[in-house]
Length: 305
Image (cartoon, rainbow, N blue to C red; front, side, top):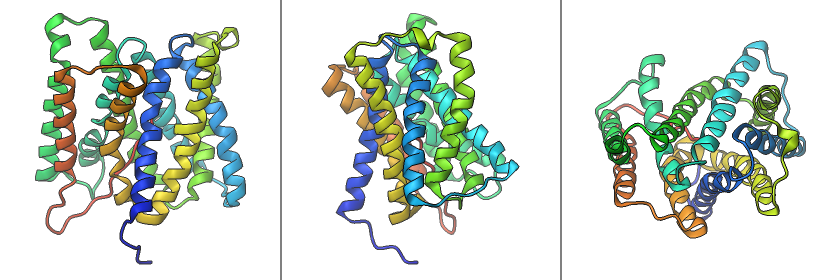
């Protein structure tokens, strides 16, 4: 079916989704003040799984996954939620949430590199190579002050967030194996698998039952489950249904910017000149990678922090 050209509603949904996903860095920064990283992810996903199953029940589009699909769901749960959420939570204990958002901008460029080696239809092109090179330049600018100061806590935490971006890239490629299934039901199943992994991990490494969050932190935890996870899923499904995956892929350009803006407004963070320059360079890399070479197209993959 021919889709209508994107209109005001489509761009409004895209902007709203960028703000929802960008808010995860801000909310995680608030939550880590009193709650440990794995426990934050567990609470967030517990709230999300309840809401997603309710949404999927209303949509009434369930399916029975095969053993192979369950395998990919477990991989998606691990690389799309458990690892990246926990690494981001651990990272923003020390670094600014806006800086974490900038680092996540490297995710779609990582997808391009991985896709070149493990897929047959998404090989590296000149625009994509230029995008990756610009992205690496942006990371060099971002890491330069820490590299000059030595391999300290800030650099380790930044590398952890960069590891989250790599995990999201693996998730983006794994999710392609599940294309065609009802999206809300699929996300509900994947989120349920995250709890299977998170519950033993939280009780093994942390003490989730001993937390006593303040009202501010409790609100941040609830908001993480409701806004970027559950509501973000609804917005994502609506966008893909209305305009397809390529239009939705523009979210990769907006989430890092949204994360920085929200951190400045609500946390009073002031990113340094090197961070803003790095954001611009990575943004240019994302734009360059989206240039379509003649007679070759690709589907942009989105991330959800």
